[in-house]
Length: 199
Image (cartoon, rainbow, N blue to C red; front, side, top):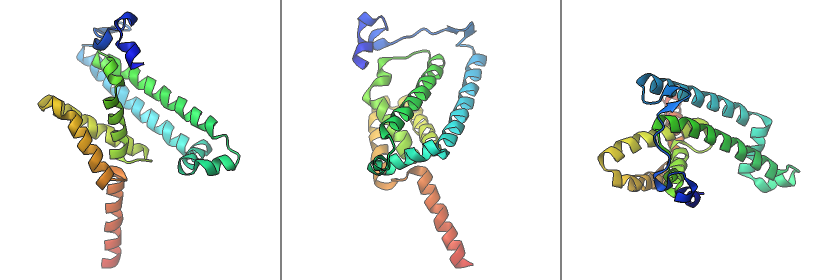
């Protein structure tokens, strides 16, 4: 898909991508009021998706997905059609990603094939790993932290960003195997244990 979108014959702008998105449904995307409105709408949609995902993971469907994650073969032997569940959750994830893309484009005004390269995929992996795997709030926290760092470092030293990503990944694997959420949780448990011994 990356190669297809990069070709000039597709009339999608080649490596420059699609640009000059000025108006959408009659709204001026360069207007500060429209930008603020889009930002607020995006935050609301993050909350809606988070709530939906929480409900989904707490349901029977979600518990089966957790079982597939922990021991796929055991669920298969128990008679569950694992492929159907994996396909369903893949489609749900793709729909969320497509909706995120629809919110991303009006706010940035540009979409290029570069958003499909390996670096973008690594960034998303680090969002989850840094925030905390297996926890929805961890993915949101990781995405916020990585994107704040991205804004800072690409403004100061843009060429260093891939190295920063690599350092984040190494630190996460070596020292934060449960992510920031897990690290905070472990500190909380230690403090509780200390309070019990002190009292």
